[in-house]
Amino acid sequence: MSQAAARFLEAYDAQLRTEAEIPGALTVHGHGPLLLAAFVGGRGFITYRNLGGADHQGIQALVAEALNFFRSQPHITNVEWKSRGHDHAPGLHDALLANGFTADEPESIMIGEARTLNAEVPVPDGVRLRRVVDEPDVRAMSAMQDGVFGGPVSKERADELLHRLSLDDSIELWVAEAEGRMVSAGRLEPVPGTDFAGIWGGATLPEWRGRGIYRALTARRAQSALARGKSLINSDSTEFSRPILERSGLIKVSTTTPYRWVRG
Image (cartoon, rainbow, N blue to C red; front, side):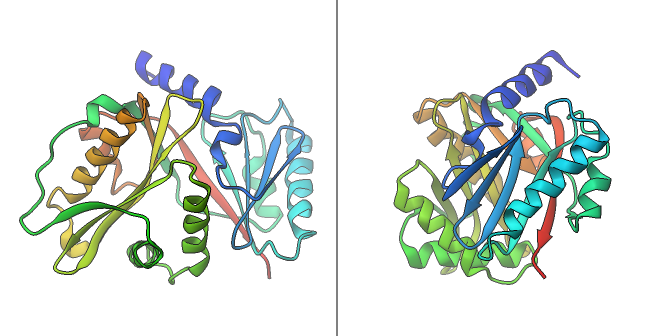
């Protein structure tokens, strides 16, 4: 690992793997090294800075206890356990599967200097970038992203974004529009008390890809992050967006794999 990647990863673990990672949570419960958060729409989320040196048996117990905590709350319908590839976590994968979790595809943890993304990126004629805050726009943005990611339209996800906006917790939602519709979107999440702002949810309609729109949205969000005093940008990236972020100067420092449990 390069010196820059090691420095970024150290900052990531120290600054982000705390309650800073769960803005907008309705409740946060500590259980040993774990943070168990509940969000609007019945979503549970499990994160941690580390697993406290737990061995196989200890990790099995942590997984079962965390899931039982959410099982006891009927309004929680789905739970995500966010794992990281660089953690010492013996037996975690098997323990999660044994408790009914399924693994999503791994994503790359990308980090870089915000200034490296601060560029004027031209967009095609007729494409406009703008920030959205009103409910109809937020729901349209969320529905477009759901479609790009191949899932059904999630009212709960839009509800959560609207809840975040109502808290005025610095989240920014950005879209690119063309021909009277949204063709690309993503959000910026400046993290209070840290050097970081996250860029998340990047999605572009297939027929509009390859025209620089996603890169332009990324640059615009980086400019906003710099204006808010943030020097580092982080993102969990699919294999589609990773090369774009690498060309903008972000570095892959680790991986993250979400594991999901859904109430039957």
